[in-house]
Structures are given as structure tokens and as C-alpha cells.
Amino acid sequence: MYREVVRVGRCAALVLLAVAGVLRAAPASRNGARTAANENRDRACLDGFVDSYLDALAADDPSRLAVTKTVEFTEDGQRLNLGDGLWNTATGRGTYKFYMEDVEAGQVGFFGTMREAGEPIIVALRLKIENHKIAEIETIVIRNRTDAENLEKLGHPDPLFTETIPAAERASRAELVRTANLYFSGMQLNDGKGDYPFTDDCDRVDNGTEATNNRASDTDSEVAAQGNSVDNARRGTDPSYSPEWSCKKQFQSGLLHFVTRIRDRRFVVVDPERGVALAFAFFDHAAGKTRTFQVPDGRTVTVGPVTPWTWEMAEVFRVEHGKIRRIEALDQRCPYGMGSGWSNWRDAMSTEARWAPFSGKESPGDSR
Image (cartoon, rainbow, N blue to C red; front, side, top):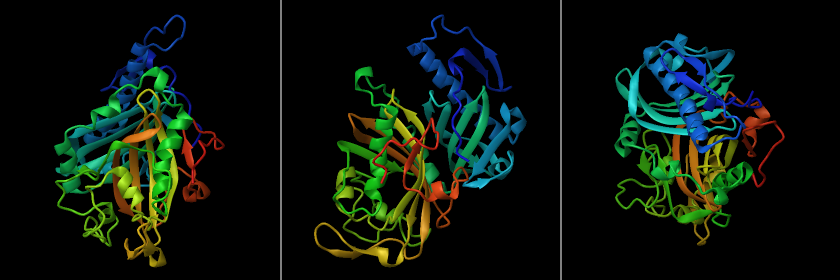
């Protein structure tokens, strides 16, 4: 279902009339070369599709959108008719906005807050644009007031996510995905001995909360985020694991071994100009015997969920010089083994990374 991407088709040569969803052609450059100004207009055009979508969603009026005849829409992994689901209950937009553009692939991602029946919620969104229309809509809706309020307290994403990487220092699309994917590979059955390409000042934000280098934290860790139920999901199961630690120290602890599989790793936005890679994925916890393991310091520990469950994830990485410097994640618990609605069963169960433009055969390597 995750089909080969059709390029956006010179979104830079378009002016988006957001309210009406109408597109008007603008003159293309004489030699066809992409200039910095064109690149910026491409980004603005893709962001405009996001704004049009969210405005239509808040108004419960999908007729405002320019969509293809075969537009596909999912919410939390479920295929729905456009206009169903959150469309029935959204009441307004929130204040947190984080846009991620892939000009080459014609895809755009978004993390932000909205209002549902007046309550703050979080939305992760992916749009694919074909022939100046929305062809695919993928959404994750996180209905947690505290998380939404924490995200809005942050105010904005880390400014590094929008800083331009000097042209001579940019990674290729494949290299960018390969580095970001090492995060997933390093957490899956984490043993503390993997390749953890984090900068010394790497930071991670998880559902609006600082999850690393957080000396003000009054909660326990990401092990907490893998708690035994929704109610205690942020209460730590091993007090030696701390959100005060750096990204690298957390992985070197080996205490995330109970994350048994990270699958359906779809890198839906890859942006070499800004060193950004956005992935949708699922973190499985098999529970049972996988909860007991030995960590690098020789201790045998028992941590993690006591029943099988899965995190539905949207996670974005800022990569510089082959290392991960910033991470922002959105996640929520979902049924164990759930799929995205965009992959066949085999791909949904696979731990290989896939990325756009996507042909079903391309892979950046080092995916396990």
C-alpha cells in the first residue's frame, strides 16, 4: 500500500490559495535549476497543504481540500473515509507547529496540537502530494491532555531542525536514513554494545517532555514510557535508568533490551538540506521472558511491560556529520502487532528501513 512516490511536480512553481484549495501556475525558471528561493517556495507550498488540511479538519469540511480521486486516509492505522474519525470531533487548531518537508518526494510531515471537543490533543500528520493534490493522508492522534499541554509549553521545535546544513556537509538521502535508522537498530533488543551515533549534546523530546539531559525531571525515564499500563506508563520500572542521562548513556546502559522489535520503519520525510529524517514505526514489547536480561555491568534485571503491547511512533531526527543531534518523538500505546495501514503484512512485520522515493527494492542498508 505504500506506493512509489510521484514527485510534487515543481511545487515551487505554484501559489497555494489555501482557503479555496486552488492552485495557480507561476513562471518556471528558464534553465530549470532549483534555486534557494525556489526551494523555500517548495517548502512553503508543502506547508500550505498542511495548513489547508488542518483548517478543513477543524471546520469538519473535507470539501475544502484539493484531493485526488483515489485519496487514501488513515487514522491510527485504520483506513477510513475522508471526513470520518477526528473529522467528526476536531474543534480547532492548537499552538504547537512543526513542519517537515521532503521536496524531492513530494511529502510533508507535521507534529502539532489541536483541540477536540475543546480539549488539547496531539496530531502527527503525513501528506503525499501528487499533481498538486493530496493523494495520501496518514494521521496519529494522541489524546493525552498533559502531553499536549507539555508540547504547547515548549512553544516550538528545537531551532536546529530548521537550520540549513552547508552543502559540502550534507549527507545523501540513503546516508541520512542509515544514520537515523541506527537509533531503531540500537534500541531493538538493546545490549549496550551497539553503534550509537549520538553527538555529545544530543537531546530527545518525547510527547513534549525532555527525555534526556533532564535534571529537572520528577519522573523516571523512557523505561517509564514502557510501563505496565496506560495509567503508570511513565512510572519507571528500574530506578537506575534516568532521563538525566545523555542519549548515548541511555543506550549504553542496555536497559532497553525489552524493546523486542522495531518494525515497519518507514522514513516518510528525508531532507538532506536540513539533515532531517522523519520515520513512522512500531515498537513491540513481547513481554514474558524478554523482560529478564543481563545488562553490561553484569546485573540481571527484570523490566518492561508485563503483557505484550506496542507503541505507535512518529519520530524525527536531526543528523549532523553522521551523528544524531536532536530527536523529537510522538507515541501512544496501541494493540500489540498493529499495522500502519500503509504496508502489506510482510513489510509491517519487517525491521528493514524503507524510504521515499520508494520502489519496494531500495534500502539504505544496516537496517537490522
